[in-house]
Image (cartoon, rainbow, N blue to C red; front, side, top):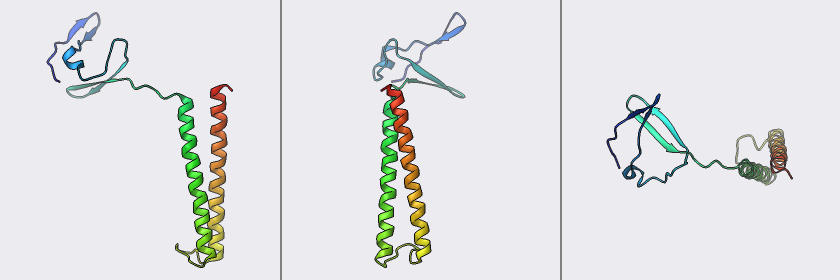
Length: 131
């Protein structure tokens, strides 16, 4: 819905009244907070403030991401070990024992770093929950 509305001066500010016609399709009510952005040269965007996700929920999601990354690294370790041990190198250099060993050590290091990140996030979550 579009409407032409007159801007009024109230005190030291300019006011715009949002009519029922404009609000009809938008979930906005008294007391809601809005974000107002200037989009020069002729537009202004008004958006309802989004509900913020609690910090604990965000940390839980970050933990899920880290755990998934760790699982992927562990899977890559098993994949590379299998292809090397079976004599079926699928990646360049994996037929060389020293390159395979180096790749496996790097993957193990990556996995262990993810484990540290997971532990740090769990501690942060514990502190936020006050438990």
